[in-house]
Image 1 (cartoon, rainbow, N blue to C red):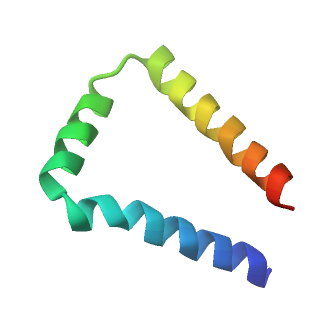
Image 2 (cartoon, one colour; image 1 turned 90 degrees about the horizontal axis):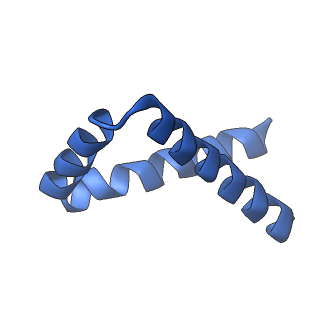
Length: 60
C-alpha cells in the first residue's frame, strides 16, 4: 500500500510541475486538450497507459 501511495504522490508532483513552471503554456495545452474529439482523447489515454505499463515492466 505504501508503494501505491508513493506512486500517487510522485504522479501529483510530476503533474504539478508544468502549471507551476509555465502556467500560460499549461493553460494553452489544457485548452487544446478540451477541444479534442473523444477518439483523440481515447488515443492519448491509451498511449499514456501503454507507456506507463512499459515503464513499469522495464524498471521492475
